Length: 121
Image (cartoon, rainbow, N blue to C red; front, top):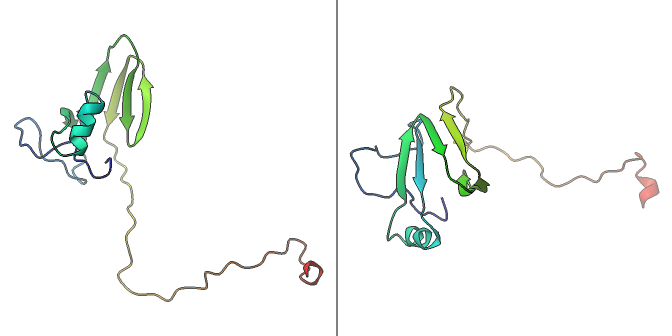
C-alpha cells in the first residue's frame, strides 16, 4: 500500500495476529492525518490498528463525513454502519507460466472495413 508503506506495522500485539494475504482476514487501520501518514510512509510510526477479522462491523456515528479509503479508492463517508463479511468466493491470481512457450505474432494486422485492400492504396 502507498509505495510500500506498512500500515499494520511490525509491533507485536496480543489482540491481533500477523496479517497475511491468505488468512481470509481483513485488517482495518486508522490514520489521524497527513502528518501521521507521512510518519507511516517514512517508517517512523504505524497506523492505529482498529480491527481484524473475517467478519467486520464498523459503526460510524460522526456528525460529518469522514474520509475513508478501501482498496485504494478514497471517498467522504457520512454516518453509517459498514459490515464486511468473508466470501466463500476466492479470486484467481495470475502467475507466470513455468514452461517456455512459443509466442505468436503480436504485430497488429491492417484492418480494411470494406474488405477491399486495393482501394485503400
